[in-house]
Length: 73
Image 1 (cartoon, one colour):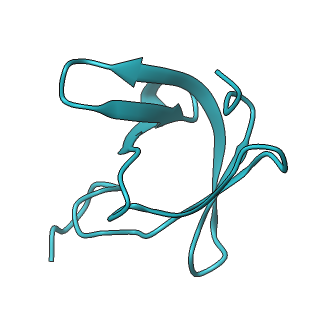
Image 2: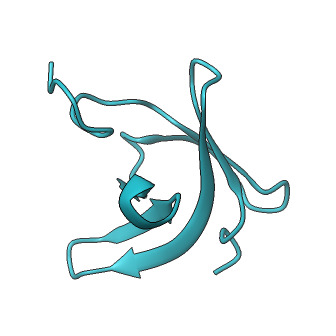
């Protein structure tokens, strides 16, 4: 819950938005970034999360193929 409101950006500096919710549907923890139709679920795994600074309210994400929609290559 401490991550809600944290800014989420990509390793290339692009900003995705802010964490709006945290979920666990049985396959591991996920953070929801954005709201409504513009939201994306990002797994909280070492392959995806480059930096997680709870105290500073920042998360940096590796944009792995398929994570943000579009082409999967």
